[in-house]
Image 1 (cartoon, rainbow, N blue to C red):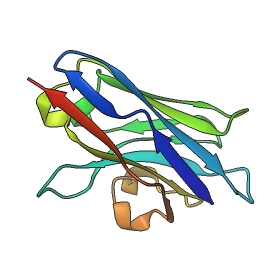
Image 2 (image 1 turned 60 degrees about the vertical axis):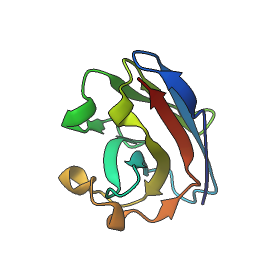
Image 3 (image 1 turned 45 degrees about the vertical axis):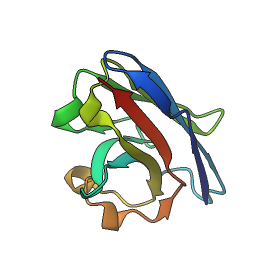
Image 4 (image 1 turned 180 degrees about the horizontal axis):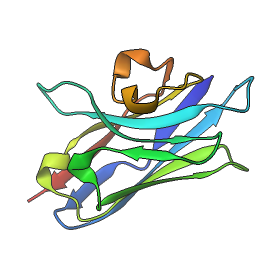
Length: 125
């Protein structure tokens, strides 16, 4: 399984970015793709995830209402639309994938099986 994250950049506070995670190599048709982020000196934090089984989504309370996850199954790509960005959203954003049914354990990054390279998001004040 390979994951390719893209779309990061530098944006002013209040601005928007859309991250993309292109996935390939799955040997099953039910999997979950998620986004995590890690700021310098902080632990990796679960942002959101989406299931290919039923399209159900999970989202962290800290970004609820500002970020939206979606998927284009035809392109095997998951998107993270980030609006109303704040300086505290600055981090390296990673996409990850798993075939496990994590449910409420989705924020535990150690349970995810595959990781893409990170993409830097920097929000200036």
